[in-house]
Length: 283
Image (cartoon, rainbow, N blue to C red; front, side, top):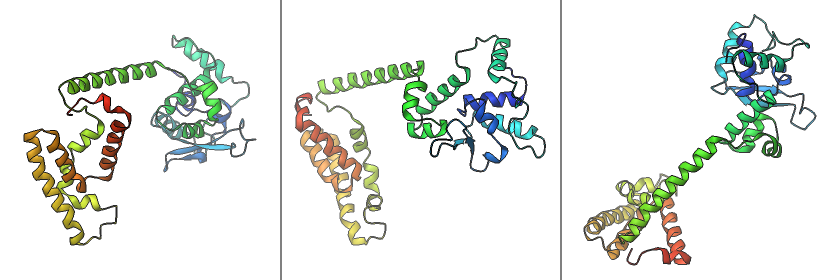
């Protein structure tokens, strides 16, 4: 979008990518509020200053915003206090000027120009960060955000469709496995398949439970168990029988990571407590 100068580009970027209220928060912004080293800046908000803790907030120097902030900083006169200097007069209406800029660019101005820029930004951020974090950056409450700011976008529909197609594909694949007498694949079954890596280095599985300072005697039993599991694995791969699979699991148990053990227990409980009719006999 063509803009008259660097300051105008920053005004737009502060609303669109920083989520600032225009013009009050833009015009209150000083260079002393910008923390370049830590990648953030302080926004002073006249609208919320009467609320406890609402007088100011910190906002990240988002990657989309940073180049515009740097450009204006490099062009600023020595000793400049405020970030926006050319558009501070009381008779300058930034909404009217933005409408002119949009029309010159061949674009149709949208309703509530600056509020909708904030709304778009809050919706984007809500898809990437926890809502309480986003509201702290934007400067509103979760209730206000849900009622007036958060939008349902085309990206939400595309993501929902993509997830549905992926789940349908996985369902079809698992149904084929069940019909073939095989157990359906899950995230945990993939993880169990990869436990040979952990068995190669049993000491890594023990660090974190009691710390790295363990005796050779403590490590001996898991090493023996992992060797036994490896031997059992070779037999299991060739036989493919349920009994050999169970033996492999039992032999591997001592060297499985805690998360894998918990996953296996959860899957067994899910089947035995009501889902057993969904698993093919002998799987």
